[in-house]
Length: 89
Image 1 (tube, rainbow, N blue to C red):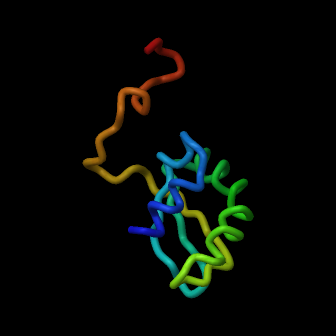
Image 2: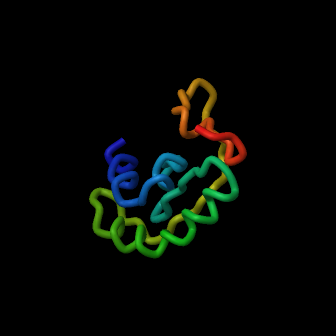
């Protein structure tokens, strides 16, 4: 939980609302993104994340892998997340 919280603080908004920590496997942090578009944006931040997380104890993160996983059922979406680009707020 602490790793996920720190990760969300390091990733800029609104990207941080569309990703979450799945697992740590050895020295690899596995992240989930809501869609392929958010996964692509998140990939641009992986070098910076590795640099920051490499010093985070008790993990020795040296790589980040990103998986596409839709938002879990039951997660409440804010009105902004439900907003379609074709509809006014």
